[in-house]
Image 1 (cartoon, rainbow, N blue to C red):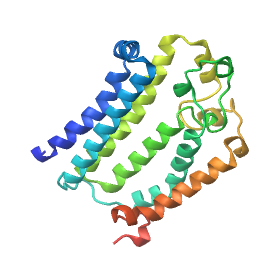
Image 2: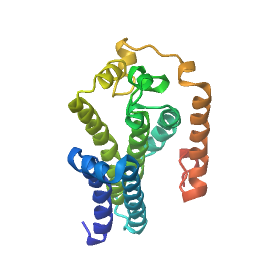
Image 3: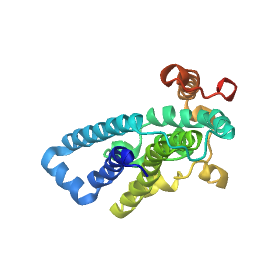
Image 4: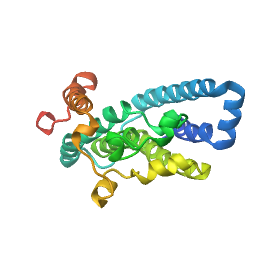
Length: 234
C-alpha cells in the first residue's frame, strides 16, 4: 500500500477510535464531571466533526487503486436498498430515543419503543451502515474501502458498544425497552413478538424518507458528478 494512503488511514482511525475512547465509561464520566453533560457533548461533537472533515479531505486526495471495479449489481443494489436506509434515517432522526434522552423522566422510563424503533432500536446507525456498505461495494477501490469501511465499522461497533454499555449499567428501563424492540432490523417483527403498522412510523416521516431518497438518487450526479442509476452510468 502506498504511503499516500497514510493520511486517509490516520484520519479514519482517529474518527473511529476517538468515538470509542471518548464514550468509554471512565473518560466519559470524568469529562462529564469536569465539563457537565452539555460540555462533554460539545467536545464530542467538535471532535467528530473535525475528524470527519479530515477524513473527507484525505479521501479526496487519496490516489485511485482499483480492487474489484464498478460492478453493475452494486449500483442496482444501491437503487433498491437505499429507500430503506432513507426511511430509517428520517424516521429515526425524528423519533425520540433512549440514547439521547437518557430516560430521565418517568415518561421516558416507562416509554415503549415507538414507530421505527419497532423495526430496530438503532434506525439512524443502521441507515448509516447501509449507506456506507453500499458505497463501499459500489466504488471498489482502496480509498473507498478505507473511508466507507471505517464508517461502516463505526456504525456496527457503535451499536454493539451502546448495547453493552446499557446492559452493564443494569438499567431496568433499558431492559424493558430492549425487550420490546430488536437491535437487528425486522428481527422482532419477523419473530412475531412485535407488531407494527406504517401509520405508527408516521406518514410524514415516511414521506420525508422517500423525498430524501430521490434527492440522493438524482442529486448524486449533480453534487459529485457520479450517477447512481445504472442506465446513466458512463
